[in-house]
Image 1: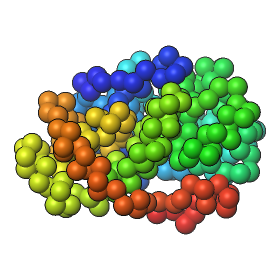
Image 2 (image 1 turned 180 degrees about the vertical axis):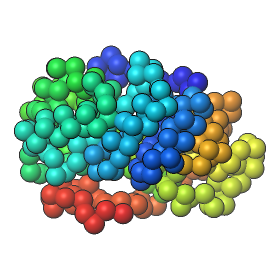
Image 3 (image 1 turned 45 degrees about the vertical axis):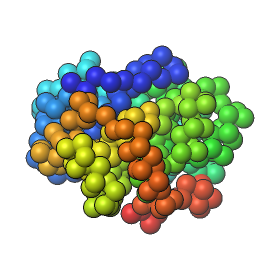
Length: 281
């Protein structure tokens, strides 16, 4: 099992490595991916309202008979569902679709200037009711977290952000650590855009691993939680095999130096101002 965990500021535990479910929608493919990930040691499964697969995830969990007590389930409130009443209503639907009584982690998917504080107030209520064991955010920058702190009764314990060798978010990671917020990387492999990089290929040869394993190990050694996604069983198993090797400080620094501040998705501040993230890549 992938047993490495982070202790969150609310006292709950977050698996350091989870399984991303972005764009995994076909029932048979989803069921096989979940089954393979579970057998490979994954216990955290990450979905979102925006992914359009919560019902399929719930059905696959039921079909594969995964133990709810061992399962760590994350979902996210979409932009269209933000606001106090909308958040509560849409989350109730998420629970029904996922066929669970609670989620382990609930995230605000993107920061929006509309309903910014009302959405978080709903999150605090869901946390108090035990319907969301932990609450956090996704794609929030320092400015968004600092703004939230002016009115929040409790702060996010996780910030899930785009983070990979082309966008290492060093300053954001340092800030989150100073605030006792665990940083979780979505698209930790940069959606495969970094895998052919000669620096990563050279390090992979040195340690006898794949470039993907090198990148994921780099995240873990920086104290970053990860949610790699794949539907190929061999890749799912490969991405889980990270705990019997280490990268040297020189190798870590070489990967750090690959940062080009290049994003795959939207700039969070623009999404905040625009009030939507579309077009979505």
